Length: 261
Image (cartoon, rainbow, N blue to C red):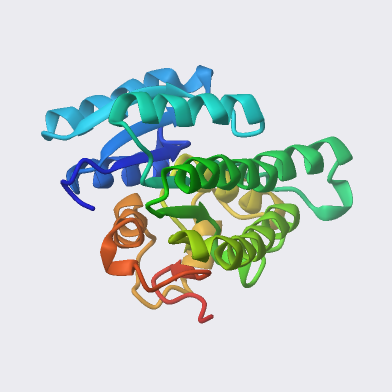
């Protein structure tokens, strides 16, 4: 793939890990479709600017991953921009820190809608286009370290990420005959807005100062530091390249050695 006019979609790429992935894929030579919610378009524009100023190609796009039509339109945008779809990174996700006993049904449904249904609809939209093209492709989903071992106060979030791991395996089985590989990445603790929120809530629950909860969890990181989006983007770069052609159905941890699968 690389510079051979490969087209890659990244959802949730206005900030955080998604932004890091989009920037790296741009540097790798993919034409990147930078997609996020209508309310996140300032971040989308920023991501596109950083890709273009580094010499890459990028296109702005809006998407709501819980909406089937929105994802169909996103795939159309990709095909219009680059003629085809080669890589789809279903990165969009949300987290909520809450004791399970207090979790509302509405909040549970929302996190399932974005983190699981959103990945399902993303995988499906990408696969339909790739199967129609007939030359394979790479579908990559956002799992997490909690897809293997949950964190307390992140139970529904953890459940959605376990489900992404299962969906990824099933999709890999069904679409291998079309030359499509389906894998997921599992970040550990990353210094992003999502983890700032998690830290704040965990600290409040456990009576710790802000920044202390992350420190407590980060004590388990063998590499001795919290992750940055680039760490995750390096793995996704590999999964989006032909170097990973013989790998499918895997959820790969990129967590500095917190958890062994």
